[in-house]
Image (cartoon, rainbow, N blue to C red):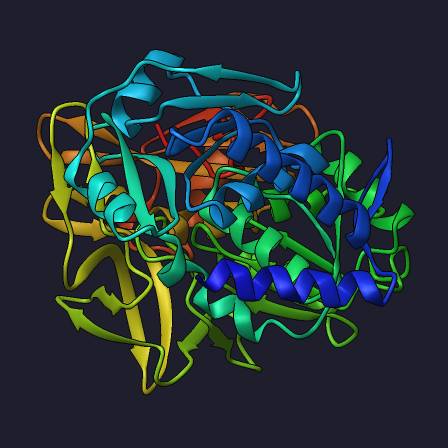
Length: 444
């Protein structure tokens, strides 16, 4: 299994005396991480050898990471779970889990679960480890994405540059798993903050001389508001990566003007269903990226990106059935293409249809973000009996301003930069914008 090759890499890092994980509370070497992994393996083999699917409840930490690693080494199917509104019983039913490990409490709980989905059964039959990542469908119904661990982890065999990396994403998110695996497989140090508050993340990055900060554009926008998020405050910083959602031109320009040329700004692309394929960012415009050759196939259908990759999921696990997957995956990402370079314009589901005209929320958000006194903005569609939908916006301001004054100023400003149908019809001034647990804007 690939995980065994990656485990050998951890041993190499241990022999060099490298540090694996640091936080405000503690620091762990690769030797200590390996010891914890071996302890977890012993527990699984001696007490739970008949179990095959384990839910790991917790965030980044020595115990949760060690159990994730140990589970894969013992050919378990692992499901990391940081935060979820789903009850344990629902997660168990969806995932076919028969064991729960609470990393914070250090407690194991066996679960009576005799049901075995075809996807789970096939992995067990060939003694393959698996990874389940919770996601939600377009309808919001819970589902679980099942991966063959060998296929998903194969890219990390080439991880070579060991950076000190800030763990900004969640432990149970595809981007968070990617950050953890790349950092540890390359011999880097994973820096864990005790809070994902933007200022706290910046303080942690400064204190531990972080070299890489991965973030969603929404998180970057919040960090840019803080005065200490500057290259002179973090001289060790080498790379800022962004992904998970579209980055507006305004945020891109703020990041690049503040940090380049001292810091590389790179775009990453990843989806729960296909993993995190290796990409290259266009040097003169980080809005564009391309996939490294030979690792996957892609095509553009009606301006929407479709991907076929060896790292793609085996399928979806639902409460009452399994939806197998084999072939091309519709990412639902609208794109613009410039030769080999791809630019993400936004999700198909976010596009606002105004009387037959398509409006990308990110385009309007970028204009609003460039206005004086606007800290951040979120745009969504509102139903309209005549036009079908109209553009609606929520804005956060630096300083208090009357609604009448702001609306008048906004309309004049937007009309000079946008077509009339793209100008927000309604606007709401709010203290903060709603974000998901993964620091992505919730547009509603």
